[in-house]
Image (cartoon, rainbow, N blue to C red; front, top):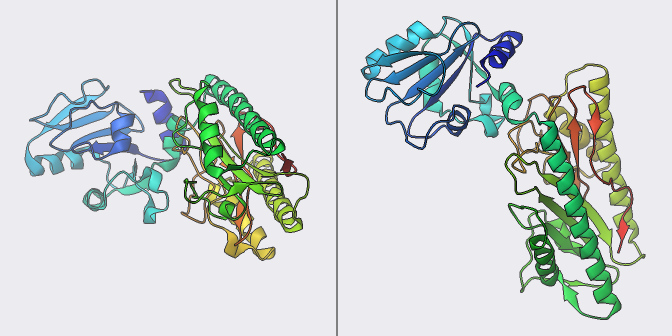
Length: 389
């Protein structure tokens, strides 16, 4: 636990403290952040980090040892009355206290405190503030080694894609019938031959199946892959190493050179939207202006509205990327949730606007890293044209 870093962040955020609590292992953030053991507490425990001074460990007298691995003064309570008296002595009156919740449920990722506990804590005359941005500093800011792992994963993923496209072209040139299910099996074979971990198979769809972002091929539903088919692939993976970071992309292809004009138009529209997002992020950073995930998403929704495509939006613009493909940091989202967290230097996130009509599905995704000195980096090829297979 980097106590000095935590207290510096509390000071700069004008917070009086940060409160963690758990009961029966319900609070997954406290479990992870405090490195709690698999042994579940059967009485509520609290760990309070003040902006100055030593942390305080508040535990039931029946379970006094559960936080012994952490720094700070230990206070043991007996019964609910003893717990309340201790909390009144610990929490500063009218203080601003960070805890793991999100007002109105805007950021579900950090809402690990239940509503009843929030009600209980409000009785102690404190102002509860979401710890959403604080948590990013400890779970979303990436190290140089993690960025390196992301780049190496990208090399592997593009190698898998190149071999996939070769298999499609060779199959068609030899007049071998292929379909989506066969493509899935081929990609799984290629993935298994590489040092890469994926928490789910690649998403892809042929023609109208690309209109469903959640489509998964089956032997019964598979469409044939043939000359003129449109193909979208979303693939994400990381190295099978501790703390390795995901590489997550979506590309759009056409089988053969004859591209449907409407497909081309929608591709150009989505590609322009992605550039709008990147330019906005760069401008906010260059001018030292607030940069929130929800604002990036709202910008693109406004653009799609002008293009009369707002009804074709099915998902947010992007998500945080870390050791999990969908990390704990800020998402580019004002559609599925209202993610008002800041996009912090050191974090990485996808930018993946998508448009889905009844006939066409187009999504273009790359991963954006904001470096600690506020530069923008994309590690890997950027698709600017429909790829012809």
